[in-house]
Image (tube, rainbow, N blue to C red):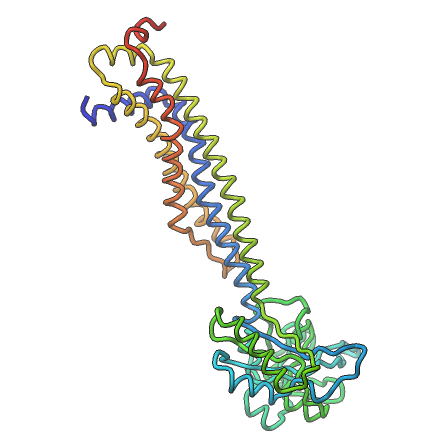
Length: 400
């Protein structure tokens, strides 16, 4: 037989048992679609979680002076603006620095009711380092710092509480005994749920102004932004060494970064991907076993046909190739349909996802799903094909 005749016979054999072929193909469709969707969901979820963590501040290193509760605070060991400038000027891998003062709890009177707010000072690089989103107005600039301007930024929740029906920009806000002019409204790009200096009701003023009123020039948190993710660990070590060299050896400084959280998120994403891929491969395995069972039944049903073909000159390789082609057609068409379904699902669900979430389908997962599905069909289809090819013509012709 010519090669194209072998293909024709295989297609005709499948077409004559359409329902059986469709049901067998269904398992391959589900398995291949699972592989593509699993990889897509895992990568999308991983990127989303890592994006949320990096939204707190990209390549962020932060340090603070750790006070021993059994000992008095040593003023000379507290972090200062001079330390911040030393980090900026001496560490080559640092691109931006910022600092915040010790937070104070103050009251804002609204409609005769007092509301507690968190008040702290920040340097002009705080917005960049913490990746804050300015909703209205502007952030603090160097002129505000130099002139000790009585200006402030407030969180969007505080703005809604104090100025529910008007634009807060340019209005006066009295915090405790001091009145500030609101120059901006902000929020964290990714909420930290009150675990950072930014609380629900927060007022940010120039660091120099807080220093002027409180007489305290100590820095509560020193921030440094590394120029690249691979430099975060190095900058973390360098900031710790610099602080210890500029202060007494007995002082304790906690220098941290978000790398550990990112590593945990990556490990969780990898573990989730592996687990879901195993589920997808199990689905393909089940479909492969289904292909093998169906083809074994097919071989039994077509014993006389195989005997006649062998009697008129069909070789063993041709019988083997015919049944392998049938297995390949089932798995190939099934994997192709499964991939198309997997590609269509992200497009269908995209309108229901958050606006900043994209679901790109990795081309590698499509190729892997197609190759694995076809390989599974050939692997499990070989045993029935080999059994058909080994049938003896005389025994086949006698079969009823």
